[in-house]
Image (cartoon, rainbow, N blue to C red):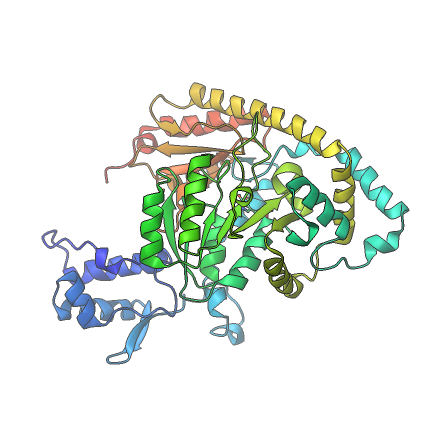
Length: 484
Ligand SMILES: Cc1ncc(COP(=O)(O)O)c(C=O)c1O
């Protein structure tokens, strides 16, 4: 973290050592300082912050008293493992890995649970219109697989994926089947890449705000994360980050981005590739949403534009068919696919054969494309319902939203003083959930922002959910925030 950027206020009445201690505590809370990380020596930090050494010694003493750091004079001061919160039997305590200590954010589990609670109106779950899932087609595809010989569906498929599905994916994406790895969802793709490329202490540059699962995965692998601002999407700014941090990889979700819904223009894609080539930087292009334009086609993928085998492209069927299928594919140079397959073998051996074969059957006909036409039209209808509901029910000026041409999300900004976590807390009490903005920032930003998923809920419930949100925002205590 940028300890050198800590801002201590000399005349605000609170002792400097306490201000320093609080700032370090909040960096530990936010994960900017990781368990096991060494803090700067007292002398160095005193020099960097232009305070006395006694101030730093007292701040470290106080952190030690709060159980947040450990260490002795002369040997260094280290961030302490988080206090045991799981209630695990005592013999387990203190034995969990550093990776486990970095895996503490339960937001994705919470989103998944909220999605299956029929009482809640969930704008949190990142799901397509599941009620449009082509059930009959899927049933027929599965039956056809079993009729052709159940043994094929019951035998383990090769780790790289069943040849029929690899071929279907390769044909659609214009690659050779050997360049495709079938994965159990995009999240597995990210996990394999993190295991393959990240050593503790590496830096990853990624979208800011960006996909929370990526933040968690790279962090759990021991990486520090530097955010590249997706609103400015400025290649010069990216180059500064590359020079400053020399990252292991760049992670981006360029089309209908999660959470902002933004689409990176073709020109920026080309500049990004040019930069990556100059700095010999691998790019992970995560594209769950590219088939979900309301109309027309999005710009070409980074993978298509790449001439130097820099890009690993991740695709999933979670946002076009259903997340419960747990199927996607990843495209990269053959040598990379081989390496990633070794990690997949260690992770889940192979993705389920029956679902792979049924999906290959669906992709072979025109059923999937027909489904996509219906899905895109329905998503647009739901987006328009949400937009109309926001205009009708939310007090004027309380909310600003980003324009949307596809994908699943509306990214919302409240007045700077309003905390979206507090809004979520109130909304949950009224049976409505969404994802608060801070979950998408690797560095504590986004407190006044939040993400609404418009696709998973039918229009009548969208209207009701937004009406309840609007009611909460009309309350002056929430809607205008508390003074900073
Ligand atoms: C950018 C991004 N990557 C990956 C995923 C995870 O997808 P899957 O369910 O296929 O693992 C999501 C889901 O929200 C996502 O938004």
